[in-house]
Length: 338
Image (cartoon, rainbow, N blue to C red; front, side, top):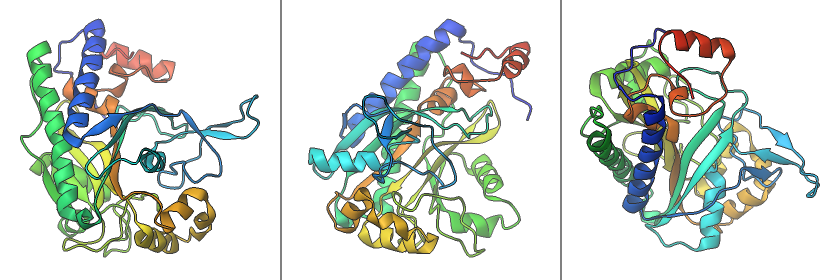
């Protein structure tokens, strides 16, 4: 795909300063709006606990055995389940939660201007009440996240003169409505068509099969609740996707949702034939009602910075791992990777 010319005039050094500035401002805004406490996060988790995020269930982890520990660990993909376990230990009240600065390696990621092997995201999780396990609460939470993005955009404009590009508000649409509207397109092209027309959008219900028999996209069975029935359709989770003007593409910023309770976990494990997970410690705690009800997700740090700093390649705002030939080719186009 042809990369559009970057519209920001920040040089190499200023870009790194602005990236750090944007990360600080957004993390603080998000923590304030969702009452999140900052905590430290592990780079790896022990194998066999059920805490590791399997993403769509097809990706494999980087594994190693520390000499002084003697049992195998795996580098995290995200901290989707670990955060919920931590909230149980911390005994946080409904309406409050935690945020972590998560760094991961996804070794099988296909490299592109928006995909890197190195993943940096704000992993956040908030305790919630059972009566709030509904679409309305999900939408309220999404609006809080989007408000933090708008706030960060505003301070970047004041500090660095970067022209704002986000829409004033976010639109909500269920993935079944999306399939009905664009029956001949695949899920990625549906998102592209919708966001190009409607701007920043949150796509609800990702993981459960739609009327066509296929899900909009795959989701792990044991963190997001993608099966609870609502007036809109199945699922109380989704993705926040915005329009990236420089790339002329839809850009996903976060995958998030209200997390499974015992009932939805049981259903999702049976639907996907993953009932062997029931015996893992994390899943036992969930099925026994020993963990708090939560909402949470991961927000891509580099993608947020790429968007707000109006960069065309994720490597302009993160020190990722890129082939030499890719670096040379991009350098000829005036795109210098960190």
